[in-house]
Image (cartoon, rainbow, N blue to C red):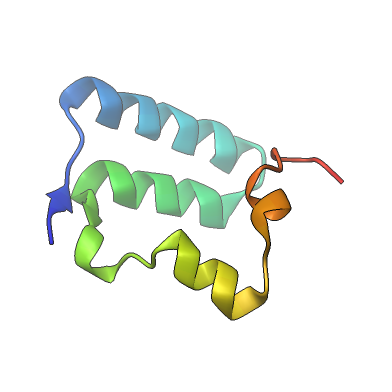
Length: 70
């Protein structure tokens, strides 16, 4: 599988988001964003959403939820 890397502008945006999250006290998210900017994503280690759905018993309605929705 492929390795996804970000161009300079995308990496800069990820680092800016990381700084904002760190300032907000969200250290783990900040660290993750910084790692993404620096290293990209190894897609061979990614889990397909269908597998996540099956593992956790999620239905189609769960996939349509937006962040923060109840």
